[in-house]
Structures are given as C-alpha cells and as structure tokens.
Length: 290
Image (tube, rainbow, N blue to C red; front, side):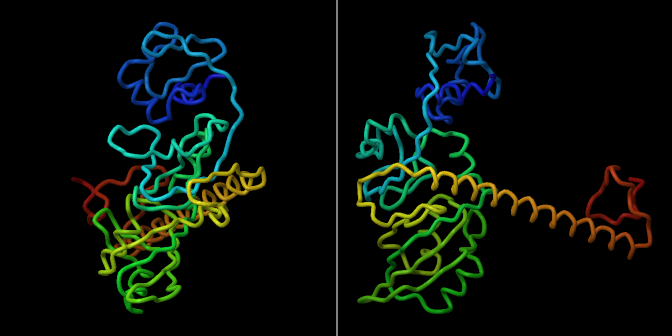
C-alpha cells in the first residue's frame, strides 16, 4: 500500500519524520531511481527506495509506546552534537528506535512519551487535539492572587497569548511557592515565560501528566511501556479533542456568517449569494464597483 516516503524511512528506523523530510529536500532519497519529492507516496513492497544510493529494507515493526521520566540536564533529542546528555541514552535497547512526542527543555524534568508510531505522535502534538499537560512548578517568591487571576485570564507573550486551563497554588515554603499549571498547548519554554511575565522565575519544573498518562511511580531516568488500555485512551483523547476543535471552528464560522448577515441587513443591501466570492471584505459593501 502506498504511503508517504518519510513515513517509510521512519518505519525502517533510519530517521525521524522530520529528519526524513530533510533528507528528501536535500535530494538524498530516490524511488525507482528517480529523485523523491516531499509528500510523494511509495509502496515499500513494490518500489525500490534508496538513501544516498543504498537500498533500504523496510520491515513491519510492532508499534511501541513508552513513558520516560526525564531528569534535568538531558536534552530531548536523539542526536545533538552540542548536547552533553541526550534522552536517547535513557531508552532501553529492547524498545528499539523511538522518537519523543514533544519536548521538555534541558533544565526541566518529568514525563516524556516516546513511540515509533509517527501518526499518533503527530496527532498528540497537533493543536487540534488539545491534549492537556500538567506541570508542577516551584517559583521564586509568592505570587499574589492578582497574579494568579492574570494567568487564568491569559498572559500576552511575544508569540501570542497563553491561557492556562488551570492554575493552582499548592503550597508556600520559605520565600518560594509550588504551583500546578495545566496547558493544552506546548510552545517553547511556555511555562517558564508565563511565570517570568509575572515576575516569579521558575526554579524547578516537572511535567507530571500528558493526557491520561501520569508520572506517578516512575523514578527519574526510568521508563515503562504503556498498556494497551493507556494507548487506546490516548487515541480517544485525540479523537475527542479534534471533535471539540471542529465544533468550535464551526461555531465561529456560524457566528461570522451571522455577523455578516446582520451587517448587510443594517446597510440595507442584499448579501452575496452562497458560494459567490466576497470582495473588499471589511469595507463598505455598498462600494462593490471598485
């Protein structure tokens, strides 16, 4: 069955999906002697696929799902010549080649999921799935109630607003505080930037939950396979998240349509027929002759 070439390379254990895409762009991959194009399909059972002129052998590997407790000081990468320590050093060889689902920065610790299931990994990281991530964070000083309310209503960061689903002050201790924060997105160093913006820098950050998977009971540096039930629940969370996103987008579209209809009614002009292009959006609809 034809599938995307980058997925074939990933299934062969040669590269992550992103690395495979880079190889294709660089012209290192060919199918039946022809340079591969990004997004093209190939049949691993019928087509000859080569990387740098060497044929690859594709075998159907069992899908593996693993939870890892990343200690601080490890970089969430399989290869990085600038990193002192990589999470790949913590993955037992019996699991084979796995790829991390998302990232934790080097100084953070906690739950990381790893898998060779590229489809599920992509779905878990996609914003439309809205998978929640829970963090326990020690910060300098004691945030005031006004700080917590500000976070709950949304913090404006340089790459857009960030609005946690939940922020809870767990306890105070000797001039610092432990908070639990829940997000459904995962931008770069987002949690640290949120607390920096209210003047309480992060001292220690631990991810304790990813979707339905919890860190509890897993020691730093150790890993465990996910159960079949946990994997099914993860996939169900992806399905539910996409349904919510679809309904929300549909509601927004209906609201926009209602707003446009009301606008035309106030202006006393007929609305465009369904399917016809609307020009000069945002301008006076009377002036449609320019």
